[in-house]
Structure formats: C-alpha cells, structure tokens
Amino acid sequence: MSETINNHDYLVISEDFFSVQGEGITTGHPSYFIRLKDCNLTCGATRALARQVKDAGLGNTDPGSFKGDLHEAGQATWTCDSLPVWLFGEKKPFEYLINRWKEHKNYDGSTMLDWVFAGQTHLIWTGGEPALPRHQKCIVKFLDHLAKEYKHRDDSFTNYGVYNEIETNGTQFIQDELYNDLHQINCSAKLSNTGLSKEERIVPDAIMRIRDHWNSWFKFVISTEEDIKEFIADYLEPFNIDMTQVVCMPGMDSRENFHERTAFVFEMAKKYGFTGLSRMHVSAWDKTCSV
Image (cartoon, rainbow, N blue to C red; front, side, top):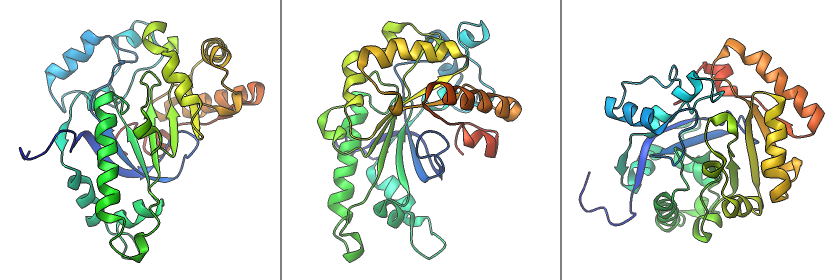
C-alpha cells in the first residue's frame, strides 16, 4: 500500500466481484459488489466468537459452513454468512477498482467501466456495514473522484449514470453527502432472530432517515410468522413504514431447504402484502459469498 494515499482517499475492501444481485428488489440485475470491512453487529454470533475468527486469520474459516454460537445455541435462527469475510480487509486506492473495471471486457468490446457509467452494472456497497462513518466519507470521495476524472473523457460519458445501491443494517445515520448520491437503499433491518438486543438493532434516527429516501426498501429475514409480527410491531408501526416498502426473504444459506423456505415466504407475502423474495444466489450457486 502506497503511503501517498491521503485521508479517506481509499476504500477498505474485504472483497469485490462482479455478479448479479441475488437479493432484494433489484434481484437479477448485473452488479459489482464492493464489500467493505467491519460491522457494528455480529448477527447469530457473539463478539467473542467474532474475535476468535479474526484471530484465526483470513481464509481459515469457511463462510459457507460458518455457524455462529448464538445460532448453534438456538438463540438465533441464522448467522451472518459474510462475517468471516468482512472481519478482514485492505486499504485500496481508488484506481484499484477503476483499473479492474477497465480490464474487464464485455461481449461487445466495451468494459465494465462503460457498464458502470451507463448504470448497466449497479454498484453494490455492502459489508460488513458500509454506512459506518469512516466508510461514508471514503465512498463519497470515491464517487467524486470517479465523476471528476472520468465523466467528461468522451461524449459517451456525458450522462453520469452510475447507479449506487447500499446494503445497510439500518443502525447508521447516513449523512447528506452520501445520502444524495444513493439511488437505492436496501435496509436489512434486524430482528430478534439475530440473537442481538433491541438496543443494538434499532436506531430510530437512522431508520427514519432511510424511510424518507426516495427509493428505500426494508428487507427482513424471516423464519417464522412471529418474525413478521415482530417487524410490524418494532419497525412498521413505530416508524410509520408502509408494507409496500417491505421485502422479505427466507433465513437460509443452502439449497437443502431452498424451496420449502421460499414457499413459506411467498405464502406469507400473500397473507401480509409485502414483496416476497428468495436468495437466488443460493439457488444458483449454493453459496452466499463471493458469487
């Protein structure tokens, strides 16, 4: 890492890859995922276990088989599958991503950078928690750099069409600088099925800020009908969130029970009126990370 990188002129990246969005309202859309390091929550696991995973070192805990201790003990119904990934990361200069996009050639001879500027490939800021304050500053500076250095380079770039999605747990207040750059907020608001306390999971100012964005969605992981009653009581009613702004997906991480769990979500969607979805990357690849 060059020591010439200035304050916030970098992104702390755990992994980055090209795929399709497997969850949420833009499921199926070609997307470039940028997973940023660290999170303030450890869904399905205690912080002590997270420290053990970190101490074990990068690559020594398989995300596909990782199961948190709260999950193992029955205090949670699912585990954050990306925890063994986002615990680690490296500072990368802005040109790291841009060079990767330039090198990626599409079927027609264009590059990933062309698709990013056209909005044909969405940028997915994920984690971990990409809305941590230090990440917000870095993302804003990256987008400013992208616009300044590349927007004007030829006529095909006159329409700056970068489409930014952020995947946040809803506990971080998103400041104006980033808020106004976001085309979509996917808020994975957490329930008690994470094994975490309500005080950890629910931050009113952050939730209301997300609710008021012009294109925001509240995405809940549900395993039982009680989970639905909980998010109505803890989120929809106190924060005046409409059910049409809600998407739900099943709490599963393998193909083993994919169809049964997806059918459950769809039946609940018919009953309660939210948008029912599944986890299509699990169906396609039987994996939850890096695909």
